[in-house]
Image (cartoon, rainbow, N blue to C red; front, side):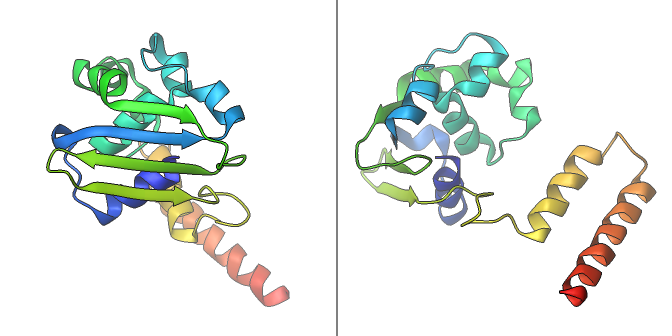
Amino acid sequence: MNTALFELAQKHAIDGARVRKVQVALSKAAFDMHGGFGSYKGKFEALLSAHYTAAAILHDRALTLAQFDPGRYDDPKLRAFAAEKVEVRADASVDHSQAKVDIAMDDGTVLAARCEHPLGSLENPVSRAQVEQKFRLYAEGVIPQANVRASSARWTGWRNSARCAS
């Protein structure tokens, strides 16, 4: 689901204020785990909520630990969007970690995406640039910037030598 939402957010300039409805179709197992939290109570339920993650992705174009700070998930605008504009359902045509997303805009436009393999799966691996971006995001403020650069350079050297050895 997140992969499909990010795909749509990257392709289209989606303004959350102009979204009429977001429809998310998940497998029954995924729906049972994530589809029942349209009105989430606290961080744990926000982490599980397909409704909240859809709202956060469409409003922030990101889904990091920052979206799970109380100041963000308690934002009345995001809470209302998750509860009123995101509809999540089980769909027999969707297996395992697949998902379908349809976003109906106020002007009648419908944006659609289907995710066969979520980002990070064996079939849809994360790129080196994405790994580095995530490392830098979470390392910032935790370790000195010089160490971030050195770690990144070491990892690049290791990856290059591993490629040469194979």
